[in-house]
Length: 410
Figure 1 (tube, rainbow, N blue to C red):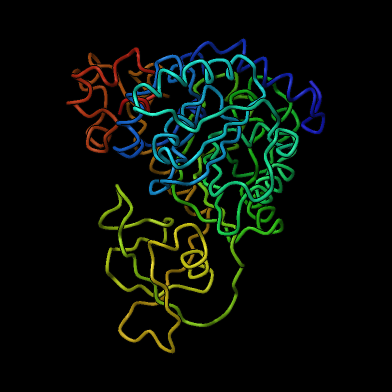
Figure 2: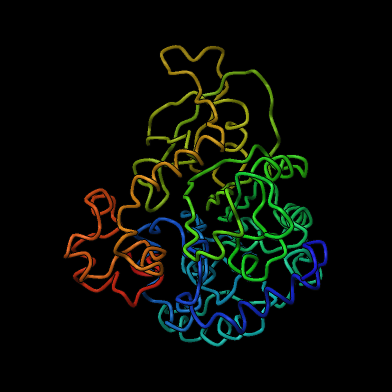
């Protein structure tokens, strides 16, 4: 197969893999497209109302759908069967809109033909549409500049042969204060061409994984504020042949936040206070791994964070003041390097790998063990307590052996 620079070859490979090879998420060979912790309870409740045809063909490596987006205009890159778009449509309500962009006809058909049924469930016709196009060519797909408040994407940008073009297109499509809130797959090192050109590894979101340092610099160069990490999870490659191909490279699902706000570098002191108002985050709001704001509590922040909280779409939920001195407050939180977060995620994954001796690869990838193995003690206590195999959900059949993606039920 041609390299990632050959766009047509990559498009053809990805279309074939997602349109014809994969019939459901059960056919995946790695956990890359089913990785990620369980979504927020509000999102889980919505997922249960989405037509099964849409859920069954969902492939994602995280939960890139922020709460508090009522009335917002949302754009989804590589929307696939439309699951995240359906969730976003419920969250933005009748005053907001959601547009999904995808290039795979089979996935688009599934997404489009279930909108009416979902509207019946919601009680109103959602402003939800799916357009055919490439995420590198958003304008050609009908996406105009400054038309979106939030752009989401779930394990798709890694599939693109030109990621810089994708990020530039998103930057142009976002309004001032907008955000790219997305999960994707990243590598801890540069990947050899043998990995980058392998059809299955490309389709499984491994072959196109960007080196984290390369991605973060690319985002800043385009104009986004400093990339913020909300979560990191290690990805397991369960297929022995594929594991041999990637060698010592490690892969991670990372939920990044990229804001289109001024890149402030001032040394001034700022204090931010979360006023509340976001359903699901009534008591505190997590901006990223280093910044968690309790409602009504004043927190010292740097200029970059102050710019995000005062200029982005979140501004209505925060009060930000410039101060001469933040006496009595802890210093502004420093930014934890992504490499450190990746190492922590890998160590956590390794310490919880005890179930691999009794759980089959697909069961491991789903993040849950089926009831029989759970009751036999297959899953170690740490996983039970962390929610991997919660007894109540196991016994209810939520994480049964038939469930290949825990995000749809757990």
